[in-house]
Length: 266
Ligand SMILES: [Zn+2]
Image 1 (cartoon, rainbow, N blue to C red):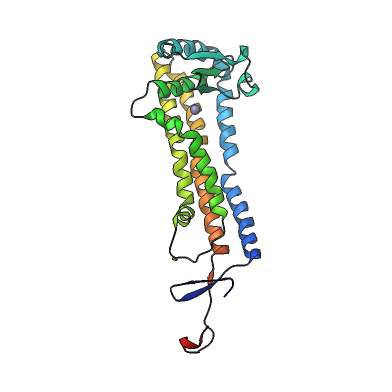
Image 2: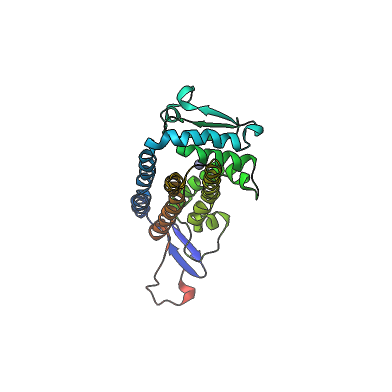
């Protein structure tokens, strides 16, 4: 029979296109709502960084010192002061800073956000002088986010099988897409935390005072919340989309309304 899935002696009616569309729309709204706090978390980090701008000249002196004592120069790492370099605007304006492992360059506007620079040195240390395989976590960043993004698509596929029907490989991925998305982002969450930890350690070794270390920690915790938040809320959004799509697209059992003996059916 067309539009029917049979499993374990029970027939299931496939769902209509309208039902699938409703599920998709609801999943879009709910997953959008779940990730909606993310921009606020990002802005809270920027605000915290701006609040420390008046101390930038102090951070800058210690940042230069930290770079000198880090041992990174010996590894061929160079410092690109974004305010004087030909780099993308976000770096020039001090809206972003980075460590680029391909060219071993730390790129930062030290006239604006030196406080963030220690964290970037932490990334360089993770990449070049790490124990416990932390450097491999950085390599999982791009594929991890790609997998997490892919899971958003797995979450919105319509279900062709009822609950409990035998599963193939794709079904198993669909069943676990929320968890997979979350786990795929975890290497980055851990590597970012390790970069902050090493950055703060380096700042202490450079001799920066406790009050400024405390402010730096506040900045770094908020920065890290953007990564942690993305993993947690992103994973939840995928999970919720999958649940909603299941509700709207899983084939429904066909109720037996006649009392005919089994052999008269078909
Ligand atoms: Zn980072």
